[in-house]
Length: 205
Image (cartoon, rainbow, N blue to C red; front, side, top):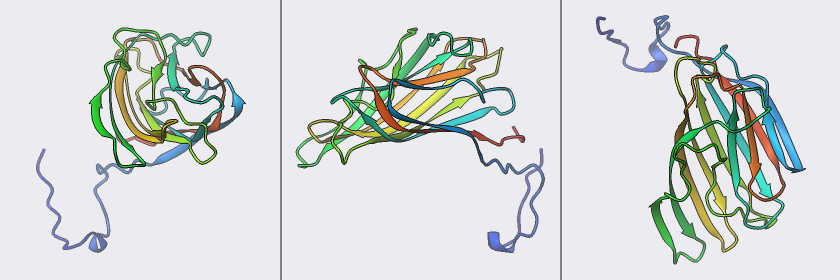
């Protein structure tokens, strides 16, 4: 494939672009809001129409102190959330007093061929009035019946000792069945907050 060279000196001078340049954009599929709820499940919208999906979670607040926000996946439309996963996690931390900082691999929070829920934020989420957790998760090609399903997530949260966590998780659902439902829930109790499901309009892929 020959290289294409643009002679314009700035992007503002370009009047047309080749059809092969990607122009993907976010498309809102659905959103759900929890209010002292046990879980939020997305059982529709994940299909072969798009290859990349993005979940955005906003103002996630635990009803209980020091609770953990997690995710799991289903291949049977949400009847069971027990897909086998292998994942890895690391986190950066910093407290308000500027006395504690770290950057660590979290071997106790990753999974190795496990059907358990995957941690998203690390450290128990603080239920103080001014603290919430936020973040996002990408899920790639969930409708494939050939490949495993990769996902990666980033989240921010504050735990009860006012320690801030920036957590990063990546892994794959080790199944060639289509992943067609996703659940978000706490480890111990209920939560509030909103989760948005977007698709990336990637017809160029």
